[in-house]
Image 1: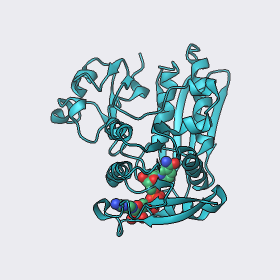
Image 2 (image 1 turned 30 degrees about the vertical axis):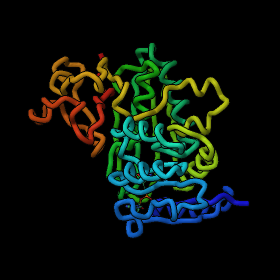
Image 3 (image 1 turned 90 degrees about the vertical axis):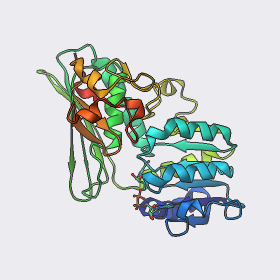
Length: 314
Ligand SMILES: NC(=O)c1ccc[n+]([C@@H]2O[C@H](COP(=O)([O-])OP(=O)(O)OC[C@H]3O[C@@H](n4cnc5c(N)ncnc54)[C@H](O)[C@@H]3O)[C@@H](O)[C@H]2O)c1
């Protein structure tokens, strides 16, 4: 008998998940969108009676409130919405207080998750080979607003964590209908290594989210998608989690979550030339705005500590 699935956010991803749900063993029991879920009014025990799991693909400004309400009524949830990770620790706290399990990921493509590990391993192997420079590039459809993509930032972070600390030149393009291509390259006088992942459609994201939905039923706590697809593979699980969180996050020698280091102080070291803001995913030059630069990261709302590692170098 199929499990009952609730879809929260019935946009492009929600509709695709509805189409693919039957082949993953789900029947869609409830669909909520902006009109039926104003101020989370659609997320009630009555509406969710008989629902086994929810998949949430909505919008960054409502995702955390949706998730909090889903946890409060004990619904296991897979969240695909991006752009809320600066609240990850608050989310972790309310998930852990609830009886529901939650899976999150900025990218539910199984291929991208494997690609990230391949990239990290290449970066680890080339970390000490100084003649190899690296680049990171992505292209997406013209409607995608954030650039660089969260996935490209994660790839660069994984390279840094794997020990590749030299400059990684990163760039983005927005054109046409491309569902997402990410490329990492290493180049030396002798040769070039090019690693590329190209999504053909959004179906990979939807299928990955449905796989996570099957997995999360009966679990508790907050889980990253890697735990779903690499469970049982001890080597793969040793990779660092890909939390785009301010907590425990350290770049260029700064742990910016707990310290009250300001952008100005970080930039003054000369190790940091740019920073990313997660709200707009835009690279900002250091000290562009003195008032902003003087504010500790920990007090900046909507901004995750992300001094760019591409330019940390040195
Ligand atoms: N993690 C991944 O693999 C992955 C893949 C694709 C997209 N995404 C992300 O998923 C999100 C949704 O993507 P999309 O392409 O479906 O966007 P979309 O704009 O097509 O759909 C978003 C939907 O959310 C609805 N919505 C707004 N407020 C709501 C509320 N309070 N309750 C319920 N629904 C509400 C909107 O009406 C809209 O239908 C985005 O953040 C996108 O970046 C993630």
